[in-house]
Amino acid sequence: MQTNYKDTVSSEPGRGDGRGRGKELFPELRGCRALKERLLPMLSGSGGPSVSHAYTVEGGSESDRLGFAVGFAQALSCGNRDTDGFPLPCGKCRSCRNIAAGISPDVTVSGPEEGRSTLGVDAVRALRNDIRITPSESDFKVYILRSADSMTVQAQNAFLLTLEEPPSYAVILLLCRDSRALLETVRSRAPALRLDNPADAGADDIAAGARETADRFVELASDRTGGAEAMTVLMRGCASRDAAAAVMAEISLALRDLVAFRKCGPQKAAPLFYSDRERAADLSEKFTVNRLMGLSDLADKAKTSLARNMNTRLTLMKFLGDAKML
Ligand SMILES: [Zn+2]
Image 1 (cartoon, protein in one colour):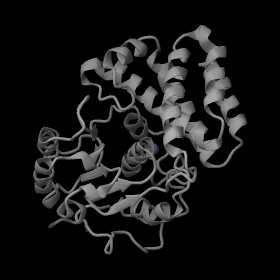
Image 2 (cartoon, rainbow, N blue to C red):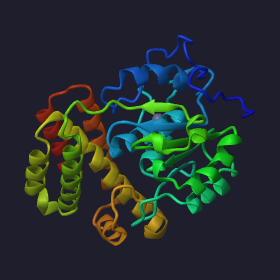
Image 3 (cartoon, rainbow, N blue to C red):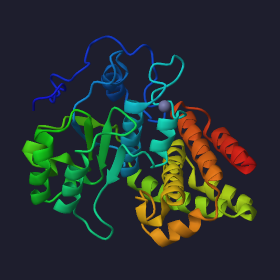
């Protein structure tokens, strides 16, 4: 691969340059210390981010991987990269907010079509066509492929053509439950970024419960008279810190979808949380965009507080209290 970027783990760019200037990286990501230490110099180096063109992202739950990938995209383009006192990503600048809301033209999330278990060659061809168009707002164009390990062999072979000669601005994140399902030729071009698995053995149960809680909470929040019930649902679904963190991550995804539905319209929005487009579109109409953005902001703040080991109950009470004011 002839580019300015290096593409193997052993020669990862930015490694060991001793910088990072004390920035806090991925404030919403719990644990993952080794990964953060590895990525900090690459993402916050003074010459701008210096990263590989592709990575596999493994470990954690599906929403952990997605949240991390969105955070990675934000970190590449954050307007406060060089501002002291801000974490990376800051979550507040226009770029961070647009990416979180799913409306940045330079960040694309794709995955298997609804009702299909594999990622086919069509999705890869769409990526190959789009990747040629230079970024419009950022220096980078980020492609997040969900369930990348479900790519068919045909899709992977088509994908290899892109991986062999990616444009200098492209970064592709392959989210995988198990990257061993990918061809060796793909894996060798995409260094692995591994998230910590939650210590709790019941991680899958937590993830499923969190989805359900978030779904119900957002539905209740759409109706201003549903406040008390929304509080009950949230408190019941957040029995532990892990559960609360998972619920906040799912609420954040759900709200992101609803913002995208309001801003891009039901046809163009690419939902990450809702599988029923019609229902998501109806639900989004029950909120103003400002309220959705405000709630999304609060969910992100709560995620950060939980990641910083703040008291779970107090964090939830603050979230609910602030949400009521919106
Ligand atoms: Zn930012």
